[in-house]
Image 1 (cartoon, one colour):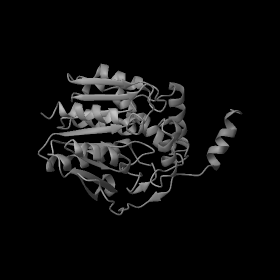
Image 2 (cartoon, one colour):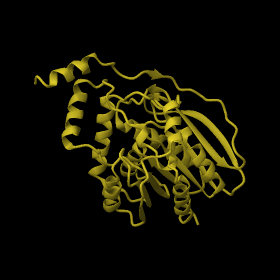
Image 3 (cartoon, rainbow, N blue to C red):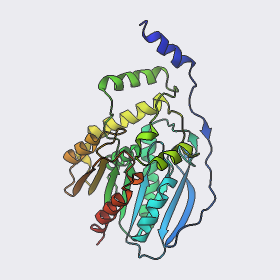
Image 4 (tube, rainbow, N blue to C red):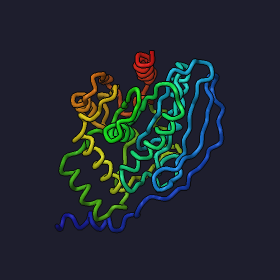
Length: 310
């Protein structure tokens, strides 16, 4: 007990919670030839205002749609270059900023329940499915991969396929750390002690430097409550991976130290999908679409969707 006292003192005197930000509507930016940008807001769980945006092809025939769900230390605008590449291949891309992230409202990287993320996605995806008459795919990166996977398990959406990039499907820490995190979160839910190392996201120094200066990325830590909710979400997925039935493309970097590649392998082995592919990339880090070899990753994604939109 004497060893725990210093930690308890730190927790009790630490800053409580993360700041609240209202939803914002950014100015429109110029788009490259072949892309048209749209943006707006929709109301998520608890009438939280969430920012969304889309990139639509203007020259290529639209053959499909990809809905992107980002992760922590992330926001939808970081996928603009990826979206432009997909526009050239005939795919529209739509994304929204998770509550508490980017231009969406909420306490920074905060939430009441992990299910809020899943329900927000369900509301957004429902809108897209109603509006589109072409095949719709979903893409989830990191924590977004956990959100997309849990949504697939719980709602079985009518999508053509699911693509995961560096998905958070295992805790990446010991069972003792998981128990300690959850127990501490019960006592000090607003302690901002959950953070990720941006230097482990990409091997490209320019990507890391940009992320460290990005005003839409909350640079401080998330709360222990947030960490506990993410762990609960991962546990739900672990117990129901066989409920994933959609065509599945699972991508992960072998050198990823943020989310264990073993989680992607586990999902691939357990899923009930008869159409599935697992690709592990050499020495790539966590953020595959911002690694030096991102063009190869994008090419693999386009080729996989092309084979399912013929």
